[in-house]
Amino acid sequence: MSFIDWDKYPANEVAPGVRIRTPYGENLMLSRVEFDAGAVVPMHSHPHEQGGMMLEGKMKFTIDGETRTVEPGEAFLIPAHVPHRAEAVDG
Image (cartoon, rainbow, N blue to C red; front, side):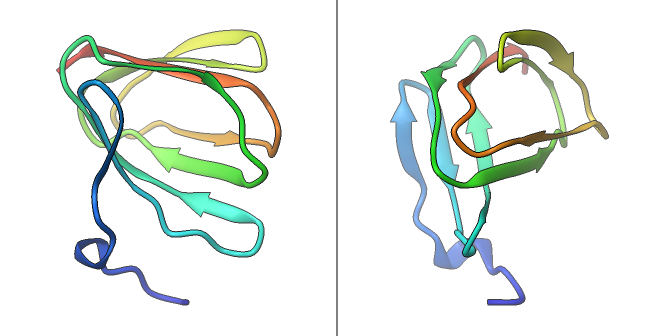
């Protein structure tokens, strides 16, 4: 898979107010996530690396014990098997 058509991936609600579309590669998952205000994805991990970029709003991310607020234009990379959580802090 070289190109991603997001409409071909169904949105799954992984936590209340959190919808995710996730294509997987062999070692990487790239997620398109939509959060309602105040929604939280609880601490979890998975076997793939996960990368993403904040398009709008603000998220409080905790990755491997470090917490930061991620704003539009900023990106993140979560190594495989590393615990992480996310919380929408601004629309």
